Length: 329
Ligand code: C5P
Image 1 (cartoon, helix red, strand yellow):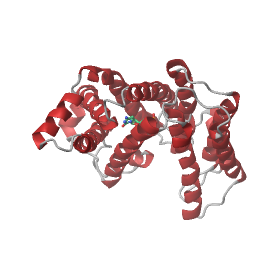
Image 2: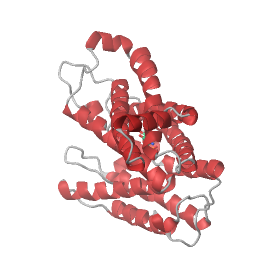
Image 3: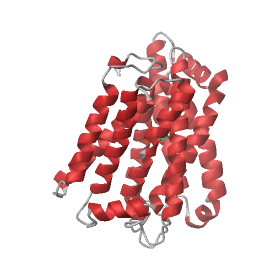
């Protein structure tokens, strides 16, 4: 994402984040519609195609579908804030700060889902945040990026935005990522409660169709038309698009669908753990691919992340609100 926002586009202006946010929703809506249709077909195998279409229509526009308006608006805002953050911060600072969502998710889970978190799990969560920060601060030194981990740590602690573009504003980026973390925690927990409360009657993919459908309105009317309408009429909707931008859009859409599955079949806290483990994996892969030296802090960070996962998931005490037994996660 950071690369797509900062890579040169020749004579064209940089692509507009609002257009990308809208396209991501269009892709997720199409994919969710296909999956919801398939799910309706498997639950009503003897129905005709028009019967299946009828079932699908009634479940998507059911009476309680308005409940998705809130998460749709919040996720659209979160996705726009993520673009603002990644455009104004270097990728590492962004990822470290975005780990705040681990803690905001837990806090909202306790308040809204009345989930119990044991002392051992708190320890796991705090170590996770610490471990990810260590990996991030010390890692990802690609050949064109010669900052060492001490510089990164200093830049992070003192707010110096070492690797961002000259035109970027680190403070704006930081505010955006903090707001995105808060919204992430709240919205994911709201969506989890909604999906799990009605999973027996409404499929996950129907919920996702509703979510993406309602997301189209703020993405189109507020983002594309109101915020960027003038720029789009001057340069066109696809100005600045290249293969990197399309790859970013596809990854965002796929990531969103995977997040939905994680929330529905595991839970939000587990989703954040999985995402954190992936940071360790991507750090290790980067070290192998770019042949960068593995630093002590990054190795320590990876170990702490693994230990944190062990602490959180060892079934000494079990979260009380999980609909699925822990062993099925
Ligand atoms: O970073 P975080 O885990 O909060 O990411 C949430 C992302 O997943 C958002 O981009 C949101 O649009 C997407 N999502 C989705 N479908 C869901 C839940 C989240 O596309 N059911």
